[in-house]
Amino acid sequence: MSDVLDEIAREVRENAIVIYMKGTPTFPMCGFSAATVEVLREIGAPFKAIDVLAEPEKRDAVKSFSNWPTIPQVFVGGKFIGGCDIVRQMHDRGELAPLITAATKR
Amino acid sequence: MVNPDEIRTRIESALPGARAAVADTTGGGDHFEVVVRAAAFAGKGLVEQHQLVYRALGDLMPRIHALSIRTEPS
Figure (cartoon, each protein chain N blue to C red):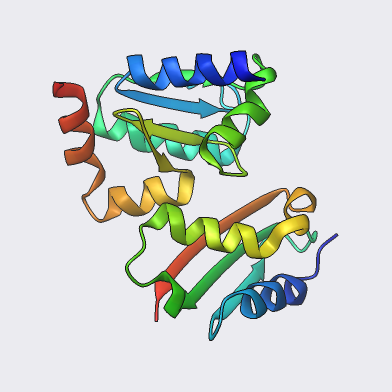
């Protein structure tokens, strides 16, 4: 487990925007994952997607990493920002794009 | 299968003064939408607010397939 946690820590550190999701952005396997990818696409910044169905060891590891019981999970600038509901809510409030812009500039 | 009332009761008893509205979105007892208003959310970020709700649901969580949460500070 700790190796997987280290790998997750590295993934979220090395990529400005990371989503842990079920399926891929092209073929999401869950409505919440699909909706979250949709928001990221609207903002238009490149993001790294990790499919927890293809890498099942990360499915539980990411939940304990962020103390969050559900997938998808979005990390911006190394920080966990939430799942589908929060990402959508932040986007509706216009708070997500500035956060992403700041993280992708670094 | 989880009863919407069970979800509401868990949240309202875990968070003092909280009011929760729970909808079973498919009628199948495993897809829910909850709106929670609680004083405990004040001054907290959205992640922490949702974590409070997840924590209140505890061992119900694995029995719930899909859960959409909206939190409002009261």
